[in-house]
Image 1 (cartoon, rainbow, N blue to C red):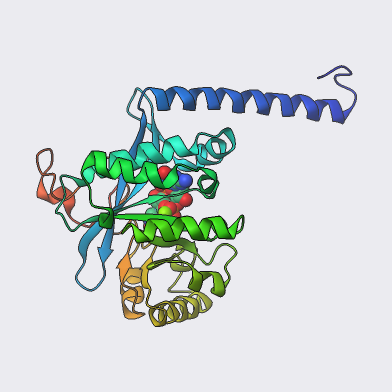
Image 2 (image 1 turned 120 degrees about the vertical axis):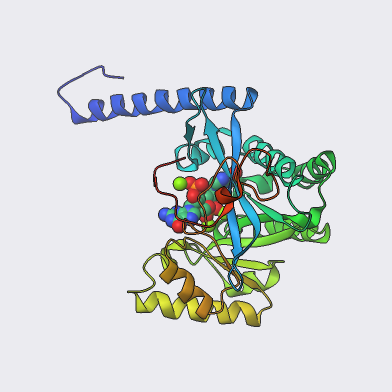
Length: 288
Ligand code: C2E
Ligand code: MG
Ligand code: MG
Ligand code: MG
C-alpha cells in the first residue's frame, strides 16, 4: 500500500508491485475464460525432412485467440498459466485440437505438442493423453511430446518414469531447445528421446558464427551416434537450410518453410489452394 505515498521509493515500489499483481490476476481471469470458451487454439508449423523437403508433420503451438481473430503468443501467457495452475488445461486443449486436425492429414504425418515441466506433477497426465488420443481416433505413434532440458531439473525420477511410460505406449519424445538449458549427457542417455531439437539461437546466425557451426555439426554427429534424429529449429533462410542439411540434420523447422498457421495443413484441401502449402517465406513477418 502507499501509506506514505510519494516520499519513499519503497512505497512507490510496493504500489508498482500491487499494480503488477492486479494485472496478473486479470490475465489469469481472462485466461480462465478463454479456456472455458474454447479460445485456446493450436497453430501449426511444418516440420520438413531436409533431404527432400517433404513436410513430415507439424508442431502444434498454443495461441490465445480473441473475438476479433487476433491471437496472443505463448510468451504472453505460458509462464502465467504455469504459475496459475492452468498449463495442463492449455496442453490438453492444444493436444485435442492437434489430434483432431491430424485426422485429416495423411496417416503417416506426425504432430508434436509441448509439455511444461510443471505437468510432471499431474498424476493423470498419461491417462488423459491416452484418452484424448482414443477420443480423437489417433494412433499414439503419431504424437510426439516435446520437453525442454528444464523439465529434467526438478524431480528427474518422475520425469524419467513418465516419459518412459509414454514411450512404451508408442508416443515419441523429443528434447526441445537443446543447448539453452541445463543438460547432462547422462540424463540424455537415460531418457527415451528419439529426437533432439537444436535451439534456434544456434541456427539463426550460423553463416557468420563459427562456434555455432561447430556446435551444430558436433551435436548432430553425437546425436546420430546415440541413435537420435536431429531437428534444426529456426531455419529462416535458404543459406541456413543448406548448411544444416550439409551438417547432417534430419529435419528442419523455421519461417523459411512456414510460420505457425491456424491451418495450411497438407491433406486438408477443402479450404485452401495447393499454393498455400508451398514452403516459402511469407511476406508479412508479423502475421499471426
Ligand atoms: P518452441 O517449442 O521452441 O516452438 C518454436 C517457437 O519458435 C515458436 O514460437 C515458433 O513460432 C518460433 N519459430 C519457429 N521458426 C522460427 C524462425 O525461423 N525464426 C524465429 N524467430 N522463430 C521461429 P511460439 O509459437 O511463440 O512459441 C514459443 C514457445 O512457447 C515454444 O517454443 C514453447 O516453448 C512454448 N509453447 C508453445 N505452445 C505451448 C504449449 O502448448 N504448451 C507449453 N507448455 N509451451 C508452449
Ligand atoms: Mg512467437
Ligand atoms: Mg517445441
Ligand atoms: Mg524449440
